[in-house]
Image 1: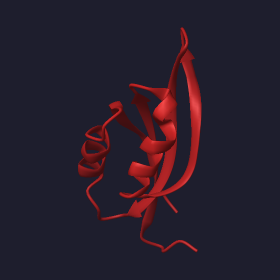
Image 2: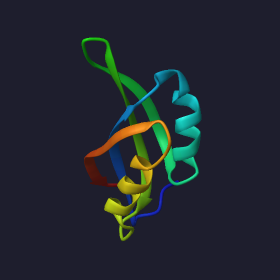
Image 3: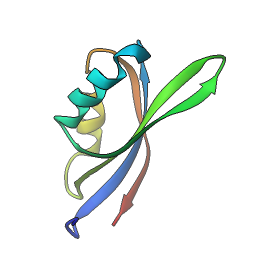
Image 4: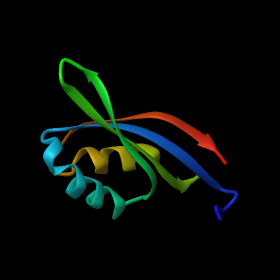
Length: 85
């Protein structure tokens, strides 16, 4: 059950090494409540990790994005969508 003050955040993450995806997802899971993960084909053999996670409405979304981008193996992280539940 989700609290009324939570938002769902969709994020696209580019990894340096897709073989280390599980380790990277585990690190992200220490920061946020991940509800869904999948890979997306970008083109030319490039894939991105897409995650959906829950966070409090008042929490700093930019700070979370910066923390995830700083994880080893993450080359880029960008928020795609934020929605209230």
